[in-house]
Length: 258
Length: 262
Image (cartoon, rainbow over all chains, first blue to last red; front, side, top):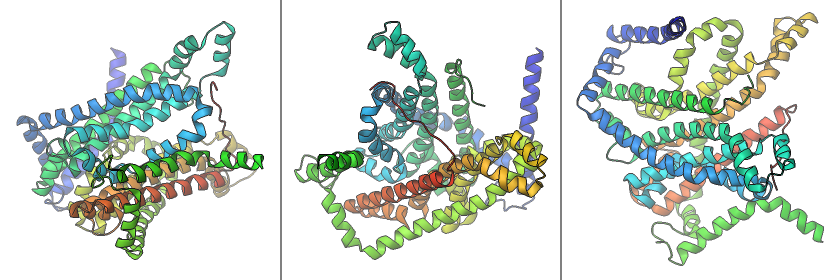
């Protein structure tokens, strides 16, 4: 009970700055200090969000976007984590030959690739899934590889000295030791995937949150635009918090550096 | 002779796959295995460069570069002092603002772009603001955390040797925080460059992102590939520049590399 009170107090204290920000925003916009048309009051923005929720529009679009992310993300996990584990284990063989090319692919600007994805896959669900797949691959792959490389050598050696063969070594030593890194990769990929799906829907789609935002933009429905921005931000924060909790859950035995 | 070959092979190992990829790009569309209209062979893409004209290419590249560099420098100039102030002079104020800053920094910059266009009008204003925004938060946060991580022992020893506030700042805090700051700057630059292309695609009339968008709308498919190639090369160049900077400015950092098996 006391713990709950302490937590609530800290959340309350933390929200003060955010609430203050909204209060100032409301004041500045309502008194037209900042042009009302350009930056609507928070009250209107939240009104617009409420409207979208009530008409079911928001949930439909969110579900669509999230489905696309879900499929692409699941595919990326299934492909990249085993690949990363193997690549990390045989690192020295792969290192100079394969990795620089893959690192280049990672740094390739995803926005620039949108038109190519659209040429290859159209603008339907397949393209969205492909975009998410491409973008989520790299953090997953590289984090898994890094995790394997950081396996404590002492543990590997003791396992070997106790007679572990390669298979046991792989499944009982390397994989568990890499789990924290894998989940860091999953967290980064999830955030990136969410960001990219919104962007991809803004550039070429006919449904989803990004498209909704674009049509609000074209209709110059500014409160709705701001509403979607707020909504997307809250979603992004939720994803972040969720995956951080997941990551922490699996990193229990890892000593934190800070 | 053999040693020479082996040494050469060692150096260019990384490029084999890239060369292989480029070769495949040339060969596969040429043989018609993939529809060459949708995936033109490398030679067509490069020939498009001549059609477009080197002058235009250079103009577009320099416009994009100018935008990203200016936006980035602006963010640097604002975020660095702010970060130092927050971490050093007003830690409690920074802690108070932290939830708000965290909230604002997590707004996806791309979705802010149309909002900035609404506020600042069409044209470069929105683009610069998005680039500034994307670069600002990573630099700010990494400066704050970098400054906070400077070993207090170092500060205390400096003080006990008679250093005044300015000396402590320039000789202890800045070098100590530099590593974090450079990482933050590199992240900021990556984000910036990504957003640059995105923003130019949506609302500009010059620059590489605009080139991509325009080629797409005009259906000039080889030009799309050319623009993407240019963006890729530019992005890589910027990235290598930053890595080189990081390596040469932070000469005291060490790094270990090893594989687990094999």
